[in-house]
Image 1 (cartoon, rainbow, N blue to C red):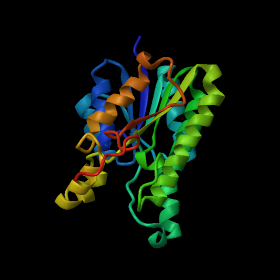
Image 2: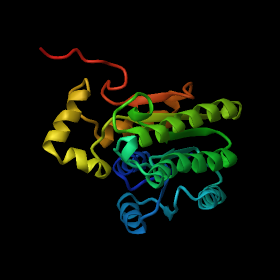
Image 3: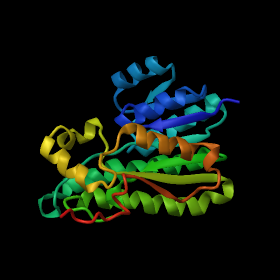
Length: 244
């Protein structure tokens, strides 16, 4: 029987790779996001349905998930790869900027998780945190707060809904080459500096993160819940010895 998945942020760098990988399984993938033109283009490319939704709007999130279940009679997996990239020290961050970062990253996770868990009978939910939510990184105060909150939200929900057989996990990417991170990846000096922080000697690619999400959605991770999978080349776990 075909499985049914909903991907929020499907047209982003990670979301589009994940969508294409999942579409190859023969399952049904609902592409969800705010940009209808991009959704329509990706939908035609992978022959999968799409719906326009702002993931920070609780009512809209509830509506699209309800429509999916009403049509398909099941929902096996939900993924949020909704997020933002924001680098500023806290003394230069305005309250409006901080609240926007929280809204895009944390509020969206809350809305998606709440209504997925309200409607799913079993399955897997995967949220997006970040290395910045796991360790202290300079100039990351707002995004660190938002992504750390995603981890706390995920773990508590995993405890609450384990009895239903719903697994809830998160991925925590390091710097990943997407449209959101172009300010770093397109600058040779900034990219070289960032790469040096990653013990494996490179930054992440969307395929790296998508592979981890695919595993968390699959039955191969059936005994994994409340976990954060760092996809960061060792950044959050390894301290390199300074070169001579």
